[in-house]
Length: 277
Ligand SMILES: Nc1ncnc2c1ncn2[C@@H]1O[C@H](COP(=O)(O)OP(=O)(O)OP(=O)(O)O)[C@@H](O)[C@H]1O
Ligand SMILES: [Mg+2]
Image (cartoon, rainbow, N blue to C red; front, top):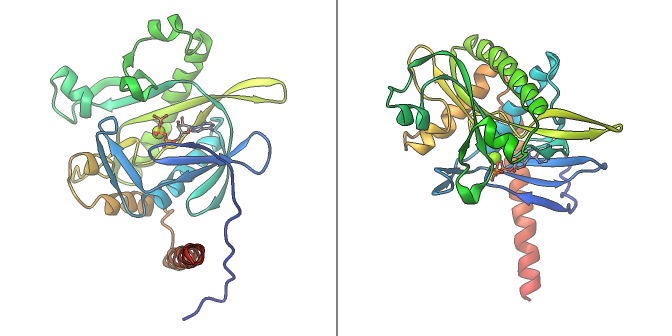
C-alpha cells in the first residue's frame, strides 16, 4: 500500500562534530544544536567497531524519555524537543571534560580492577571520574586532578555529585519498576550560558550505550555489554528496554522511516548517476 504522506528531503545543515555514536549539527536557533543518533557502536576505546541496526532510533527515544523524566523532577538538561526518529534539538553547552560514572554494583573494568565478581553489590553508590580524552583513553582521575587541571571547580563538582546521586536514585527506582537493575552508568554535564547566567546541565545521552542494565529476574544483560562481549541479540536488548519504558516506536512509524530512507537513497543514486553522465 502506498503512503499518502508527502516525503520531504532534508535541508543541508552545518555539521559541528562527528562522534562515535552521534553527530552534532548546527541548530535552527542560536545556542541550539541537533543531536543525531547513529547506529555505529564502538567499545574498548574505539578498538572494537560495529553497527547495531536500529540503535540510533532506540537511543534517541530512550534518552529523550529519561531526560524528560529527569527534567520533571528538577534536573536541568540540555534536551529541548524531539525532531524526528533519530534527532533531537538540544541546547549547546560547554561540555565539562569528565565522564561521571555512577556505580551501584561491580561490573566491567571496575570488577576487574578490584578483583571482585560482576554483580557484587556496593555498600553505597559511588562516583568515579574519567578525563574525557580519547587520545589518552579517557584516564581515571580523582578530584585532586580535576581541580589541579581546572576541569571543574569544587563548586561545580559538588553540584555534579548532587545531581548524579539524585539521578541515580530516580533512575534506579524507575528501572526497578520495569524489572531492570541499574548496575552503573555514565553521565556528562555541560555549562549553559543563558540570560547572562551560567548553569550546569545534564548533557549527552542516557541510553543502553552508557548504562549497564540487567534483567532483575534472569540477570540478562540489556545494554552495550552484549556488543562488547559478543553476546548477540544486541538490538533486541535495546528494543526490550525501549518496550518496557513504553517508548518503542510503533510499526507504522518504523515502516515510514524505512520508506523515507529508501526514497532518499534512491534520490541520491539518481543524482550520482546523473553526475557520472
Ligand atoms: N548539549 C551539548 N552541547 C555540546 N556538546 C554536546 C552536548 N551534548 C553532548 N555533547 C557532545 O557531543 C558528542 C556526542 O558524540 P558522541 O557521543 O558520538 O561522541 P564520542 O565519539 O562518544 O566522543 P566522546 O568521548 O567525546 O563522548 C560528545 O563529544 C558529547 O560530549
Ligand atoms: Mg559519547
